[in-house]
Image (cartoon, rainbow, N blue to C red; front, top):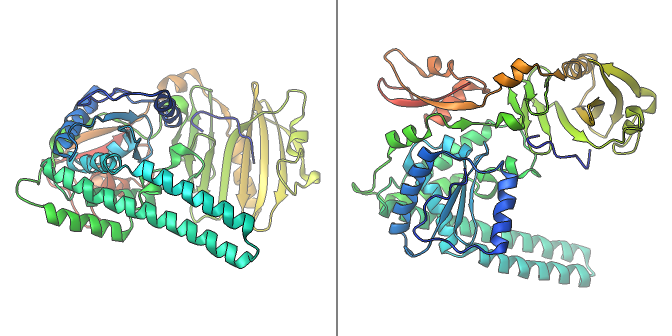
Length: 462
């Protein structure tokens, strides 16, 4: 709930381009939309300098050294990168944090440059228009329901195959560019694997939230794609193209903000805090929380329970009990509606039932806003209901000291000392779940790898 958008239902530092890119009103509007969706631009001179140098090398090694690229670092913890046909490239600080060296970052930048070079966006737009025509004709003229469904399915498969082909083509072009720029061509396969491992740690995300979508949403790291990236790298591998530039990369990302920006609400374990709006609450035991633009969502380990916390518009003259019974949720048990006071705030609660889930909802008025807690469980029990009540009862104002102390997590680059192990270093990680697994992923270590004295590694600190 980074921006706490009203729920309707239940930096820029242009990295120095080799030539100024022409900006059209449409491009400017799209750029502003992207900034709005991803928390604005992230300003970090050290990081911008490294990316500038990397982009210059890649452009010089590409088939079109005359093209201009402008890179924006987005202030988002999501792991994502994408390009506009005009040559504007975007990378999130979450992606930068995950990469282990400059060759891995260069593989992403080169991949996005490849989409521009191959004119994939305009080609895809043409294919989408053709698919839309087919869909309309089939829908309007098809009398056979089965044949209509089959035709539409084939259209979707054609578009999916087309996208897949573009990704493979961009991988091949990108690996070639990185290699000619003297970066390690295996950076692409290493980073694809890191993204896949990182995504596996996440709780289910809200697919409607742009900030929750990561690189894998549009660039799936299938085993076949990783293998293809490795095969491409073997074609280009040579003693001249093995630079990983790890030390310079780690120096550039030392102190990088990690995860969410506290000014827009953030998660610490089971607790959610919003310093700007001045409140906090704690989720039930074994819940993993995720902060998105629309809501804070949580899932219990194992998936048997879930929750959503968001803000809605409720007229000041409408009681919260009436709001819960106003029709935005189906099958509300009217007899369960109860008016409450929680830590001095007016509130109400009710239950509802669905085919597979049972719901417990709360509405709480905090100032001029009304916040909803929506809990869902496959089997409602006294224990689960108590956990939900405890969560709502934990909702309170933040103290001034808590607001002033709210700081972002950051990456800290440290040197491994004799006696240090993955286990001991992961114990120094703060504010993250599954610290040992996250330490391994952040540092490109597989399940059996160990750390070595004098090497530099990333940890997350408060």
